Image (cartoon, rainbow, N blue to C red; front, top):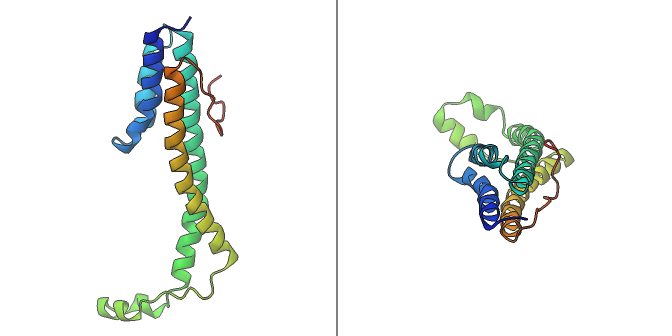
Length: 153
């Protein structure tokens, strides 16, 4: 049977992933600390800890893949549309010659824009799913995050 204390700890475990918005890598540090210190006490906490960490690691993998797609494509698109003369002039010349020409955006640039958009959508989705996971844990349910790769079984 799941106790109220187990439910509260599991809820905090889910919500601790939101510390990423305050402390870099807080979404890994705090859940690992809570999970590792309490996983022996309750199977419910252990299961929720695995699910939180699997989800956070999965989101990290997806973010890296999207960044590897979006960043080089967008940089290439931007720099291929700036005339070379803009780079060889001094500061004033650069400002005068700096204009982007987006009339020849290619399909690959659209892929980069879509990847950047998906990056933002994934971050918003992550936030919402963390809240849903916390509410489910508070109700004594184990929430199976969608898109989660099972790193910990």
